[in-house]
Amino acid sequence: MQYTESYPIGTPGKTWGETERLTWREQTTVKREYQHEVVPKIKALGNRFIIEQYGALSYDEARYPLFCIKSKNWDSSKPVVLITGGVHGYETSGVHGAIKFMDTRAEKYQQHFNFIAAPCVSPWGYETINRWNPNAVDPNRSFYQDSPAEESANLMKLVSTLGDILVHFDLHETTDTDETEFSPALSARDGVSYIECSIPDGFYTVGDTDNPQPDFQAAIIESVAKVTHIAPADEKGDLIGSPLVQHGVINYPMVKLGLCGGVANCQYGTTTEVYPDSPKVTDEECNDAQVAAVIGGLDYVIGHR
Image (cartoon, rainbow, N blue to C red; front, top):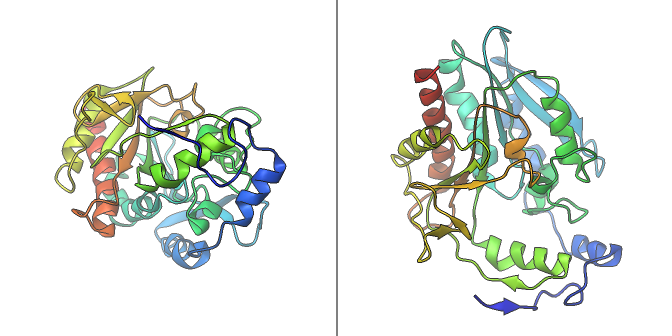
């Protein structure tokens, strides 16, 4: 492991204050547009699903409305499936994979489930290709009461209206920029030394330490393996510093860490991690891997209810 203090913002060993956070925010730029790339895809599903606005980000409420896609014929006797994407806005296939599943596959499963998808939880992060929100806060560490991230607070408010959720798919990516930008920035923000970590080459899932559901995770891995390669463990038997508990799977304590994967208190939950920087995959194959993950999980649940 190599320790480095080279991040250009802040003073090594000191946590960021408002000056550093503002400096960080001012160096961000819009690289793609939520209103052009995401919102039209969501609204195009309005003839087949209910499209609801569940909030808006105060940074620019007109630019960043938050939408969810719901089953049109909601049936209180059916279990609920929640799909979230873009909690980290830069993780592109989480956003477009969620939309693609709703567009191409959800109706096949509506005899079994009610669906609700929030495809782009963090649209500012989507536009600036960032892990954090404008306040240098990570929404995916902020799912707890009195959240400092309004992206997380808006989603928690939505989830609180849904009743019991049986299945939750939180769609993510692990990218090379996690090590070249986002992890060094995190270490600088928090005033700690950055320790290099290898990026897994392939897809994996993160289960909940307190409710791991290994057979459910295995069904997802088997389904995704038909689309893209599964990440092998590193030389220590780990993925991103966590022990590999089964093929393609690590576990985190979802609620303790404030992760979106713990927001639903569901029976079956997974956080998917696509690897978009592999030369072996295209952008569309990354979207397809997210769809395959949802399909594999749903097929497992149907067969074990």
